[in-house]
Amino acid sequence: MIRLLQPRLSVSSVFDVDLDDLVNRGYRGLIMDLDNTLVAWNHPEVPKTLKLWLKDVSHRNIEMCIVSNNLSQRVEEFSTKIGVSFIAKAAKPRRRAFRQAMRKMGTYAETTAVIGDQVFTDILGGNRLQLYTILVHPLATEEFWTTRLVRKLEHQVVRRHVSQG
Image (tube, rainbow, N blue to C red; front, side, top):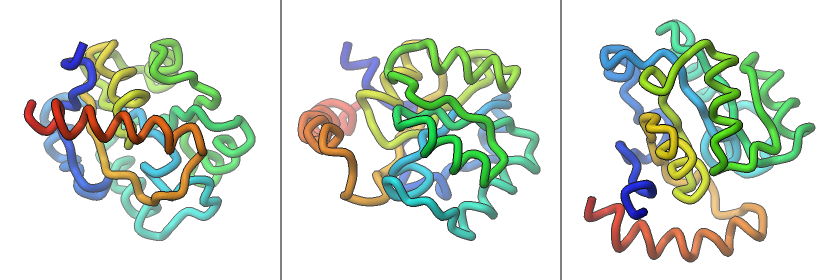
């Protein structure tokens, strides 16, 4: 079970992901969490640095899809601003939304990576389908109250098992 909670890669932020390495390894799709991964929780604006990074991803012919447990309106509004497909109310770590995202992008498990800030949703969900999982540090400490509760347990798991992996 602990192996399902271990990301394949851990970096500080999406900006630290080596996109050339992903392409060289054959990854053609990128499933991305929204809140505290791409932008701070419920932050409506798209920072210029993120716009440039998304453009960089696109220039490498990597398809993108936001998969978020947040509400449809929030995810749709943000995704529309950046021109990326999305799945809201994803119920991660359930596999259904990850499969839907791969269908939207036209990718398969062996050609899809997942980037997210939560072990129990993004990493577990991606690992359940054997996707390449990348854990990033949360961008902010402000987040939904249930997420704050889960973070306490997640912190213990990451400290004890993931960092040793």
